[in-house]
Length: 155
Image (cartoon, rainbow, N blue to C red; front, side, top):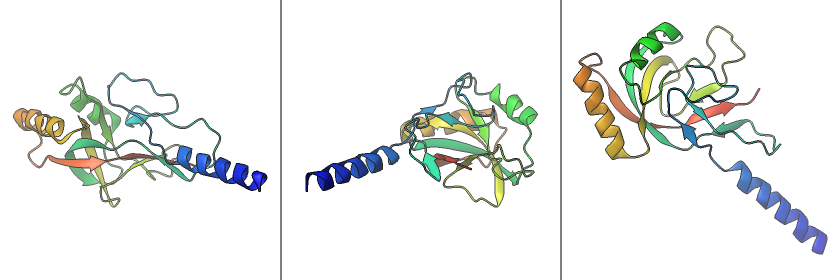
C-alpha cells in the first residue's frame, strides 16, 4: 500500500509540473536560449518530463497585420520593432519553408494565415494602452487585441 501511495504521489507531482506555464519575456532584448529573434520567448521546463507541447503563460498581443502564411520577413519585423522599443514584435512562422527549427506556434490565431504582432501586456488595461499606441502610429488600421499563449512544440 505504501508503494502505491508513493507511485501516485510521484505521478501527480509530475502532472502538476507538466501543467505549469512558462513566464513570458516580452522585452525585445531578452535573450532566450534556443529561441529565434522573431519568437516571443518564455521559460521552458528543464525537468526531463516528456511533453508534446509546452505553453507560455497567457498574454495579450496587438495583432498588427494579417497576411499570407510565411510572408513576413525578419527585416519587416525589425522595422516595426523600432516603433515599439519596449515590447517584443513577433510573427508566426510555424511550419514555414519546411524549417524544422520553427517550433513555436501561437494560440487564438488562424493557422492558415500569417501575422505580425506586438506584445501588449498581461492585462486588458495594458493591452488597450498598447492598442492606443499602435493606432497613434497610423500604420496598422486593422490592429486588434488577442489573448494568446506561445506554444513550444517538441519534435
